Length: 505
Image (cartoon, rainbow, N blue to C red; front, top):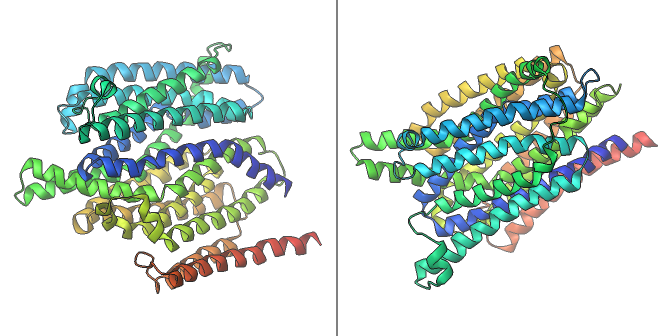
């Protein structure tokens, strides 16, 4: 139990700043929903889908490679760190130059010909974030929680403050006609949603500057070491790219497919783009509700990845991973029930009722995130066994499934097709990873307990539908759903805590 407490503590320390940070950013969604139209929010949704893809591309798995090689005795950790930074600085600088040269061409391709500056801003953002990922990984590996938290909170604090200033203060005053010297000199209505991107750019610069003292190059350049690291990380690049395709590309595909459909239905180009962006905005806003699960998964990954690499030689390491998986599933199912049983309350996170038409996809997306959390934890087998190529194969399979199903389902179901695809994709990847992992790095997972909690959560959710969570406004419905949630907690307590007491006795 001390091992689990240690892992839980690390999850709390390293994950809390990320969870709280992402949660605070998450709270910007109501601001965007109130201040921007569905069409404008659709632009934000699409652009950040591309950002997620580019950050993975520019880090190309070197974060995981750094963890792997810094724990190996045959390599000096300072050399590993320096060579990782050499690699990312070079590639990111080249990327910024390239993206600046072709910014107008890219803007034309994205159908934002009047905003080539978006491309340059995002090019700098993703380059800075890619470079910053390695000093942050160093802080995690050295257990320097305070500095890690400080940097993340500073990044989020600056981003939120600037969003509130530009969008809440300046835009609100300008729209209502209450202009003053600050608004007149610091706000330009033509920039519009661009202020969201400017705020992100400035916060990324602040984060980079705070991490500069950590970017030391004390180790010597070692081409052979870098070659080994790249050989390990390249499959992880494909894992990351496939993850982004599965997680975010549906929003880009949704816009393009709906745009083409509207054109074929004789709508004008401007009408078609507006309608497509509106649907994209509705889907993107409702997707945000499920980010609570994603934030927990990220926090757990921050703590578990370096933890498992450092404790790989422990004779009980596989049993620890197995038990940890059971606890992870319990938490994920609890979050699923918390959101779905109280969806009538969570919907007010999106204060504009025009977005509520997409609430029905939230349970599907939450189910998909449960599968993603399990798959993310399962993936430790190919990292520890140095079989990262299998991660690329599995992720590639998921990416192809995402592309194919979205093309089939979006024309028929609209943005709901994206949700169905996400669930099918992560479920398939979870199953495939488990089956392959049994052969190359068998871990004795307690499948009976895992399936029990998943099925229990599904049954409780289905029972809850007798009181529709979207139409339940009276105290009886609230009490009923609270009873169902407590039922899950009580069953978990007696099954897990009671069992531990019996073992200890």
